[in-house]
Length: 246
Image 1 (cartoon, rainbow, N blue to C red):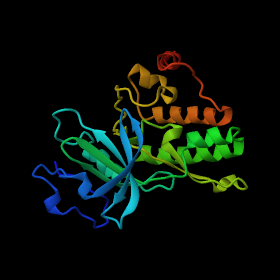
Image 2: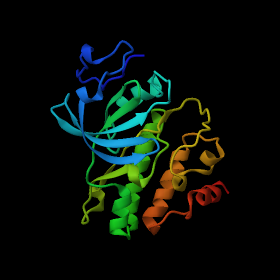
Image 3: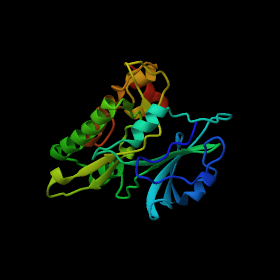
Image 4: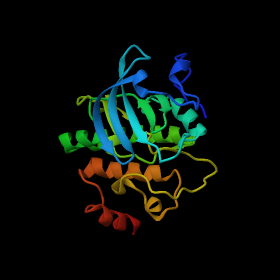
């Protein structure tokens, strides 16, 4: 399987940088890692410099492949769909690349802060602003679902505030990012593997039989968080899982 490359913008990877399996030889030939931003079970995020596009600054999610697997763990349909995303409330994905050990998902970098820190900083989010935020999230998720993409990782830490105007909340703009857990779905076939933050996961996800509607539950929890400053279920992870499942 050949390495999937960015959109249809005529930027290609020279053949000498691709091995005989279709993998990139060295990620460092294409991007320079500046610093680590986050670390998580699904992979780590890094700030990178894009050599292919005028040295612009991006973010890459680096996901380790299971031992012995030498092909994409993301399906071709999902890759094509993610690279074609075009919505004002969803962060762009520029490249999905792989080598022998990692899958690299290169995305927009937003350094204005995420929704979690925004809520913590502003504390009392009024209903009008909350409504605007939820409306944008629902628009983004509707677009994804219409294109058969389930995000599976919707939480405030994956939502970035692009613009905020205290005097006019209608000017506030956000983007949903981080598609490291995304899946391509078709014909309502249920999924069984657990993915996501327990505090934002639907009961069906914890029970192991869910579909794309689980994304909507996550948005509901975010709405609760916006209006109250806390999530509906508190405690250790095992306690949250039990409460949500019940």
